[in-house]
Image 1 (tube, rainbow, N blue to C red):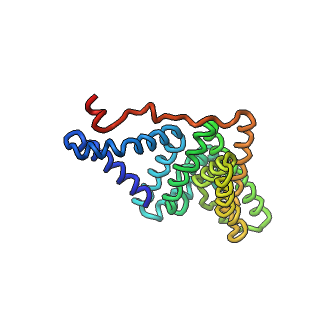
Image 2: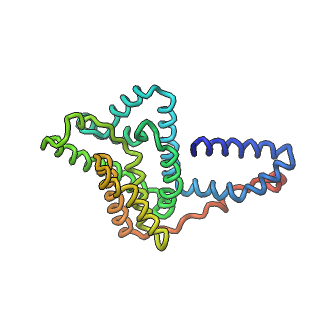
Image 3: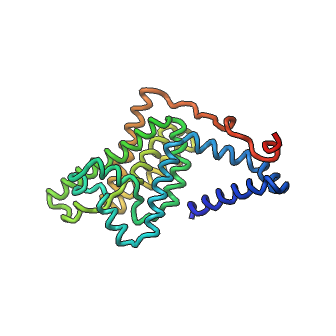
Length: 257
């Protein structure tokens, strides 16, 4: 599991740094690894909204793993962006559902990887305020449009009544909106990779599974794409900040200074 691997690496790194203060060989390893950890640290600092959000939904998902599945199913249904909840408390429902990973937390590692790479890269280019707007548009507008389709299906008798209380949560909506914004800035082979990724992961399911959730992902992606395009018309993408030079240098030399 990616999350467990990341936590293990963090623990090992700080344990190594602690040993480095009393053991010369450990201090040497810290000095060799510091350039890479500083780059990683700078990457995280340059996309604060993305990584704060990763921490929030990861914590909520880890809670799911330690709670009985029936209770989690009840909680996610009560905090889902379905017709009943949006009619009762729309703002609270949208906020709550943005913290849950669907299917009892399955696929958490994939979410973490995509956010930490693709969405973080997009935040570096758009800036934090604009990527927050893109993510919010994907979640809020995507959810509202999906619910509008859901309502129409219920009123026309094309969907069962239980669809009004279905589970639909927002981490994936925010992710596909952020990925769409990133693809908008890609060039060359990366653009081809991004288009294939969105085509297979978001557009494709509309042809082979055709569920309401597949429609929701497609609408969230389109909302993120349109909003990102509009934001780029206001101002061009920024030059990614280089924060590596602002970070302290670890290792033997830093300890001696």
